Length: 65
View 1: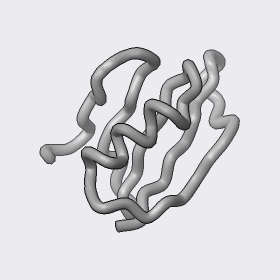
View 2 (view 1 turned 180 degrees about the vertical axis):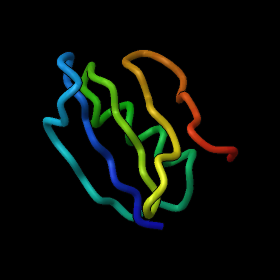
View 3 (view 1 turned 90 degrees about the vertical axis):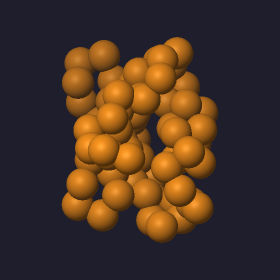
């Protein structure tokens, strides 16, 4: 599955983005934590936002897994 990751800075502005093919949501959450580098990361699958990963926190799910 192709996941899109958007790193959001403290001002709420996207400052970096990636598209990566991963096996599933668990892999996407792990990737988001590293990609965030201390910032929040939105995870999108196709046209749906599936979660936001806050720095040091568990994913906040946008949809049912």
